[in-house]
Length: 149
Image (cartoon, rainbow, N blue to C red; front, side, top):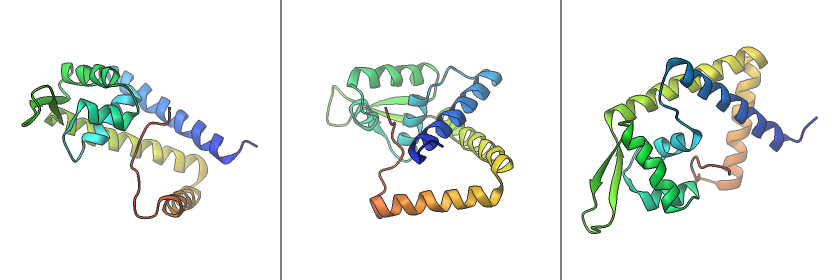
């Protein structure tokens, strides 16, 4: 049997693949996992492209490409930065916030399918165990969702 970290990575990948397959089936833009991390990062705040790049662990240019795509699709809005004329703040639009709600529902559906496959009690135990481990490693200062590339 595979080590737990490998099983977690493979499970995350399998669920992510199912998530993106469903996005394609309903005809949404070709969103990638990096876009999802940006949605989550902007959920409660606005940020600059530099902030987004630092969060994703990519260059400013790579972050700008992602922001450009999300802007072209109407998911984000760019606003002038009040003190730095070279920078812009990026925020989610109504379409972006609606997508985030849709994505949360889709993840919930996939989680329900996992519960059907392994049992609700097993899923609840896994959730409790993972939350306890994160609490053990990070304490109250949880780092939030970040890419693992």
